[in-house]
Image 1 (tube, helix red, strand yellow):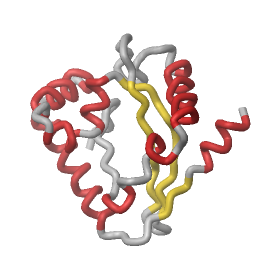
Image 2 (cartoon, one colour; image 1 turned 90 degrees about the vertical axis):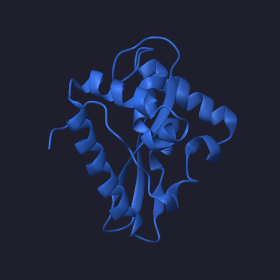
Image 3 (cartoon, helix red, strand yellow; image 1 turned 30 degrees about the vertical axis):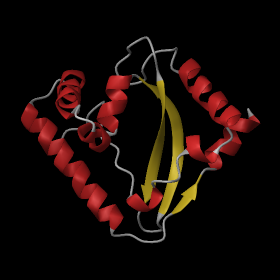
Length: 146
């Protein structure tokens, strides 16, 4: 299976309430997101679009030890962010737009889009069978030290 520049990122349901925006004081979240925009040169870190940006948390998953680890906070344009969170995007009726954007950014076909989405869904299902996820946000401490 091909690796894509723009990918879907499904979070296990048990971890849904652990996003930084809801866990941190607003001033801390503001600093993190603005730092992400500056690191990206005020452009989307995936497609390079300029304009309004949104902060996105990138997580890794250690399935053996049930640990969700914060790896980065990155700057994304609205279109890329909608692809990353395709399930929500589909719920609000923008699924076709997200599919078109995925194909455009990744230079792929509709069939490849569906293959990638299927793979992401399988990963999501597998991770949802794991119980007792813990969250490692040690990256926040490293960022604050800088």
